Length: 425
Image (cartoon, rainbow, N blue to C red):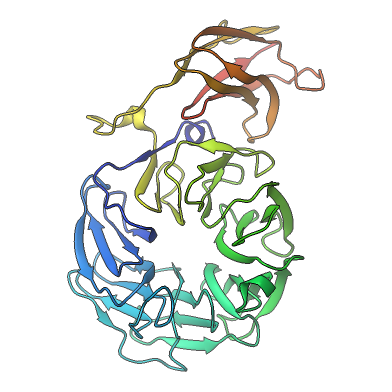
């Protein structure tokens, strides 16, 4: 848990910049692909340090990408009539690692109009859904892409945007209930038979919104974003029972254009999408959120275990423990620093010193290893300078905390720093 908390995002300086990269997929820590609405597919083979344009088709609008291995992959096109796209081929495939791409030649069932979300479930099963303004379709292959079958989902939803399967036959799709977005609610559907039949697991209580992305960091806990083109407040969805029930949770009282959502564990995650406002982060399962120093417009998070992730939007960001990366090519603007607490370990109280480099709103919080905030020690504007604060080992209610390891997190407008400390009474 401590390792996950020390990870931080950085924008990759050589990544292509565009209106929005829609999806990313990595077959290893270093080898991956990104796709965008300009009909472009890029590949990196060095963990994002450099990118090569492999395929470009201006009539297509690629929304999703997935690979079974380093050679065999697929890219979903949103289809004609959406965002200026005229290409009617909903799915492209490659057999040579992306050097060449061709449309899927035929479908078992009605050809989807377009595909938005895709998941590689295992080395032979891939599922996909579409599309953002309908019609709703579910697509699946169980033989590595040799045969694709599609299902008309109009009986269940007006459009589908994302998909998550925990097992080749068991999973969720998310989307909208009405092609007129002002009349739509968010919807989550569930299947246990590979998509032959579906049941509604959730429908949001408001109109003018729809489910955009879904993220399951564990078998028990999952999240889904709710997008709105206007109006507020803004909510997201959370399940703590494996998707049997979903809770609407407040994200923002004011308007925020939510799209991407991703969680690296049950408690730590990010929401993005707005074109002018920052991405937001939580470490307490969505109870509280704060602005993160990531370029806006994030649409997709891809996690490679618990110590590496990529996120795409206008650019590409990488989540890693940068202190372990040799010859780091990405500069960091350091607006604040925080020292190791002293004494450490401690019994009755400890001192935490930090430095602020420019006028900023500063927060300093203490968390337990489950990601629950114990107390907030600092919250307010600070001028440049050195500061010190004491923690007496108690929570906000004044109760004494038990022995163990705690994390303290310093945040300013552009920086976030995490250290651990040990309470031993």
